[in-house]
Length: 536
Image (cartoon, rainbow, N blue to C red; front, side, top):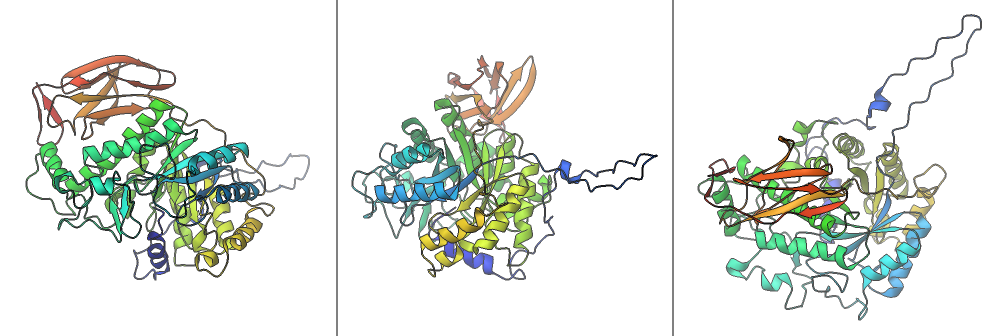
């Protein structure tokens, strides 16, 4: 999450004494890879000649990603006029990055004019100007990729409301009664600070969010999308809209209202977030298989050890905001995971936390690429350079947040953006640093094929097990979302039969692209108490 209201809160969090924050867990200062961990045996000297053994260098990890990126946010100048966009692209090019992560969908509105969403309400936005179109045109001309950054569940902000009558906050906001799509606490409240969030477990809201993201890929030549705020708000006590509770009870057989720390309830909500990621990825790939699906993911607190999923399941990322990004990578839902690894090396164990989260993500990535996103605005330039170099040295790509606030002094209004950019450019382009030499990022996304479908004809289409068969063997499993949608990415090409609730369909998965199976009519199917589908 990268919002103007979020920055002060994050700064306060990172300045907190480690004694009052989550107790740190020891994490490796340098990510461990199989090649780096392997011991090196010196070659014995020849018998006839005394040998002087030269030190054997430690093998460098093969790069997981070569992305070198910069976030361009819309919480201030940078994207709102043609002149600002030209300046932003020129500055990024001179810095030497190969990718721009450009804010497109902010709070269910767009810095663009050809999406399914209203244009942002902002007096500073140049009349009839399309920021996404122009930044994409100029960046492509300079050899940079453009990833459209989307705040997926963002619905509204009370301080800067969208004035369009068609905006979701006016059609399905806090005052819409049963038609509201907002995530709520047990007492019915919906504000997190000044923000409202859409609930991923409300099927109509999910359709709306999917449609907004897909419209960017359909109408703009962007190289991909980045899913931000693809989670529940902080606090762990969200999801209590009556429609969400009714779905949960119908799919699981649970009674009453679950407590916020009810494990089954948390697991179910976490699955709704994953199902939203899955459907967005499938729908994007159905429009353009070579579009990158990325996410900006949470790394709160101390990291789990590399490869330790049990430890990850005890983190705030998993238990509080309900992100399961290791699964997203493993199942091919993400092509690139950009960790929001916003740490301050000078505060407690945060420097080790940054390295530890990088190591963990690299160890559970499946086929996905991984990049470490670091907070330029929380650190002086020398620390930014150190964090970027350590991240890239571990084999990951690197993305900096953000162009508008490139140093701690800019964020603290002690320096102009131009001064901050000059300072951070000097250290990042210094010999041996991450941007000293321009590095291309030209790889194709790892997920380029799959299948998707939907079940219909039942009042409870969600939570049903879907199995994909080949040669009589199960090769993948998934569950349906609240609208009955299901799908799989990264299956190998060839025949696949899908079976769900007594129905089946078979068609081949293509070499490239997502095939859409016909709707399957489910009859005489009853949800079992476990939440898994039963049928006759």
